[in-house]
Amino acid sequence: MGSRHILAIPYPAQGHVIPLLEFSPHLAKQGFEITFVNTEHNHKRVMGALAETDHIGDANIHLVSLTDGMEPGANRNELGILLKSEEIKLAPSVPTTRTESLPWACFGNEETQKSIFQACLRNKKAVEVADWLICNTVYELGVRVFILAPHIHQIGPLLASNRLGNSGQKDSTCLKWLDQQSPCSVTYVAFGSFTVLDKTLLRELVLGFELTGKPFLVVRPDLTTENPNNVFPLGFQERIESRGKIVCWAPQQRVLNHPSIACFVSHCGWNSTLESLSNGVRFLCWPYFADQFLNENYICVIWKVGLRSKKDEHGIVTRTEIKKKVEKLLADEDLKQRIQKRKKTMSESVEEGGRSYKISTISLIG
Image 1 (tube, rainbow, N blue to C red):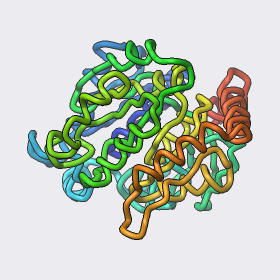
Image 2 (cartoon, rainbow, N blue to C red):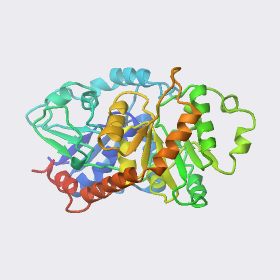
Image 3 (spheres, rainbow, N blue to C red):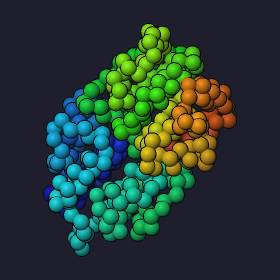
Image 4 (cartoon, rainbow, N blue to C red):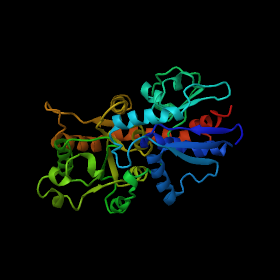
């Protein structure tokens, strides 16, 4: 395979696999041959998506897999169990130190928390010995890098052109439904793959959307472990049938780019943050864990392109709070102008000749 060969090993979660997949074809165009290593579970999901989209489409990218050590029917949304199993099974297969002939690049999907980089190759030493540290972000966003490394390159946004579905489902009916809605009218709700809400939070969430009187699209009926029939109040689904839609999966990049979308209720994962910024869609923030709270702070306090969802004294985001914040979000013209400015900046960054384009071209070549 020659000296221009890259072994790409993403952190084994969907939100980290996709950006590295997006980066790989660009590296292949520079003459690199790439072996992309996934867990068997994620590999099957990727291959299922490629069968329909041919997204990678490059003979120099080889997709391979390793076991994650879990049983076929195990719940891989249990993050703690998943990572413990993968650490045991994958560790012997992944090198832990750098040799003189093997340069390392640590790819960080999120640069807002040190542990994300440490997890890139499931080993703390990965960051310490890295020759390059590559960040999926945009320089102009002004996000601080907390790690000192020999070379830090900000090359984002690396956006999923067609996000992989949950459990291989490819339900795109939401796009046809969005076509039937008025411009800038729909609240889009997506909390990523790992977020789980108790039934009270989920009920308040959807009842809040009902109070707004506006259409809404919710991804993942399994946001709670409860049976959906036991979560929603009697008659709710019939009342919202004409203006509310709940789907198993949505092509998020295409949804956020749809003219009917007004705002995004998000867990503030880094991929979702970049995708919403890139499409000029305002945020109502609902962080769940880890760096998502820090991302929320950037969205609401530093960039001022979204609002926080405030909990009451019982730790509940009530339906009236949701209604109030959605209405405030859509009425704030200054916020709308700020998010459109961010959209323009991010678009220019990844255009041919833009800052991220230039850096990603030279980062592993020079």
